[in-house]
Image (cartoon, rainbow, N blue to C red; front, side):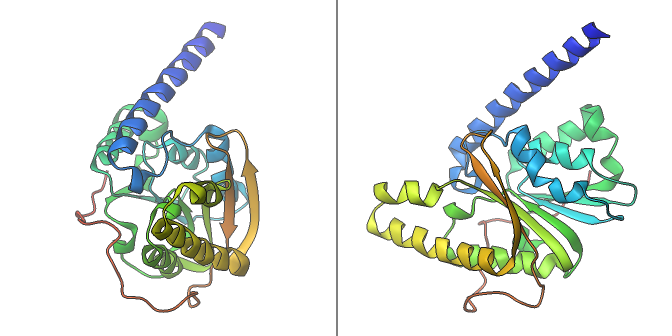
Length: 249
């Protein structure tokens, strides 16, 4: 038994470093859409699935921006019979990587019948009031303010009444960026901060600080009301330049 435990630990460590390498390469190519240099730590992933650990019935769950699957792994651990998990990812390399994980890794493969993989922008996910939980890894601080508003509107549209949106942001990221930014970028960061702050004040039900992550992060849990969105109405923009058809596992 100890030998098996050691082999499992070694395999997990190897998987983590391979995942870091994949994530880092894609982050360098598409930093605006990825927003980090390393995948989420297991401590951050654990906090992001906190709502799923509560006593609940069968639910529909949407993970936005699963990347290499570090948070997906934790979501899969807490699926119950009757749950349906949709993963929406824009990055083609991450889509291929996730498909591979569902083919070869037992902890992914055993849940494949409960999972649908969507290769598109989150704004193009169809339907209204269809998810009980949304877990997002999108780097809101990297986007123009109009796109940030559109993303929140999309979450409001997709969540069922009483549904929960969970996402994270790095601690003090806007404040740390501002002194090194030009005037235009400072204005963008300020406006994004106002939009995010308005939603936090109106809808946040709790938060969790996660220091064991690079960089440290705060996880926010919001209870949005589908019929209520904040801010002025803006013209809808595509979050990404191209959208591909949804794919299933």
